[in-house]
Length: 133
Length: 201
View 1 (cartoon, helix red, strand yellow):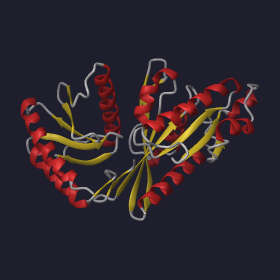
View 2 (cartoon, chains in turn yellow, orange; view 1 turned 30 degrees about the horizontal axis):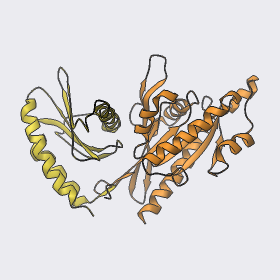
View 3 (cartoon, helix red, strand yellow; view 1 turned 180 degrees about the vertical axis):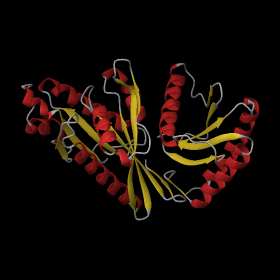
View 4 (cartoon, one colour; view 1 turned 90 degrees about the vertical axis):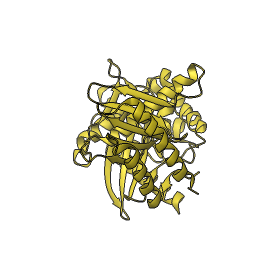
């Protein structure tokens, strides 16, 4: 799979999914990164001001670490991660072996509701992504 | 692997500084961070221990301007040099596009350089990459120490030890004073960008 290049059309479709499924719901910022720490695409509510490049590098490292820990305890993977803060929370979920969906959200969304939508978003993104040559 | 965004016309390139413990990988990035401040839009991220040793990696995003209308974003990483951290070193190498191997020119570090380079070779193999094919630049760091009476390996010995088979571009350097830090960076960026262009054509 040539995951290095994504067409403009695919990116627009993926951004639309992120908007409909996550940002509209109240997620501050939804980012898709690859496991090497590259940003594939970002959709936010226009208010968030994160340093997303550093964030992507750290998130990829974080996820890779947790993945290595999973193997140490005999799991094939921990496919999702959740960090809870006072004001903001971060949810990480694997899309496939190469991609990760990160959602940053505040106190107004419940984790359960977010997770439901993340699952739906991932299913849709996988379909768009699978259309690659 | 570099990521190319056709919609926003952005190319993200990952360059990793690799080498044995205390050879000056982080010092290279710190110098770049100071010297090229206007091309760097965010803060350098360093994950280190209390003893100031790199624990996971340092990260510095670097803007290089445009090539054929594409914005080139260079992501500089270092690996932790200490022997025990090979698992994390391997994680940082994932998706790497170009490597700077920083060797410590101090005489007593000779064996450590060779071991580290061998391990780089093995780590790349685990990602089905070859040290003979990936863009690579050698940097023989700490050459300034000979002025302070500390025994430093001659470049010919370092070349023989590390670069006799690879035959990649090399620089003697002093990361602490900045000598050849920019030259090394320039060389690895140009080799990497050329190699990405070739892959795309």
